[in-house]
Length: 171
Image (cartoon, rainbow, N blue to C red; front, side, top):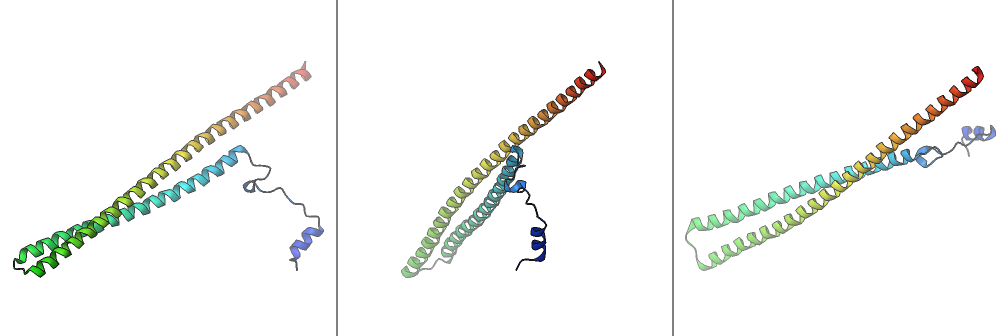
């Protein structure tokens, strides 16, 4: 039913501790919360950086496909112009092939434009995430400086109090 260790802990009056800091326990300070938020924002920024890299790869592949389609159209036109002898049906067929290749190239260019827009949106999102992280890091630095100054003031007050007590005893 229960593992023996759980039974022994219950019998000995096992005392439950407060939850750990990462679960919002009593020891969580504003600085700890801010640090966790910074770590989360950094992970979000890294994910956006990965999405931007993926969008860039997609854009490069689409650019290569557009260039390949353009080269195919040029090659078709050169090949048809080089042979010279055509009958009417063959000329119409070749013209339709060139037009189909041109339409395919235009469709690929439209897709490339969409991918470039997506890449630009992702780059803007990445820049915004970076600004968020930097602003939170500035807040964290300020909070750390305030905590350090408060600790220094507490120590100085404690030393002053000790000095006053010592003077009272000596005087």
